[in-house]
Amino acid sequence: MTGVAEISSSGPRPLPGTGRTAVVTGASSGIGAATAARLAAEGFDVVVGARRLDRLTALAERIGARALPLDLTDPASVEAFAAALDRVDVLVNNAGGAFDAAPVAEADLDSWARTYEVNVLGTVRLTKALLPKLVASGAGDLLFMGSTAGLVSYEGGASYTAAKHAVHTLAETLRLELYDQPVRVVEIAPGMVKTEEFTLNRVGDRERAESVYRGVRRPLVAEDVADCVAWALTRPHHVNVDLLVVRPRAQAAQHKVHRESD
Image (cartoon, rainbow, N blue to C red; front, side):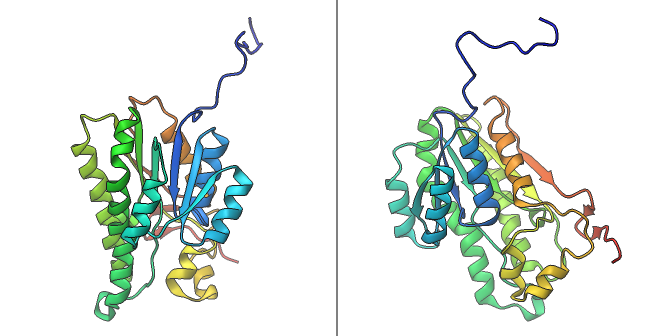
């Protein structure tokens, strides 16, 4: 039939994620919240985890997900979170953050420790706890939210770039270690993404945070990254997207950003 969409006699096709349980960490805001919403729209049974349970619960009610408290820096919290899940097909390791912009000569080691604990050790902690369930699913997906900071270093970013380089290496290592298991390992590495909290948490001042994006016509937003996550997770399961780097068109590289004059 030319020009007419063919409709199956069995009815509309199910959404790509139907019947699959997806866990999204750091889902109380930003990329995590956008990813949870997108995966719910794709038909996944979404479980969201974060420390701020009030925001998490509001999101879960809005998108039809299940909210569970999760503090990746607390082994007992991770253990309780994992025990509450009967099935896990997808783990989106999104929780993380940057907490300073100081040069190495002025490094605050407490900030370094916090950055590493959240981005790296917490990610390893939850991955280790849920990996048996991902393998048992028979078609698991283990996705890491990396960053171009995990591929390229820059001044004033050492605590964060060091942590995200570790996340990048973690994804690469698991890709090798799980090559004979029914689990895909995917890394999404965004460049400049404008969200409500990331840069503000890093610099501690709203004016400084806004200046990062000033003149950039269209930085990425959380939904752009969520779109990449959904695309990678809904490919046929023999297709493994090892690494997907995504930047706004205005950002050709870490230090090369087109800014329009006011």
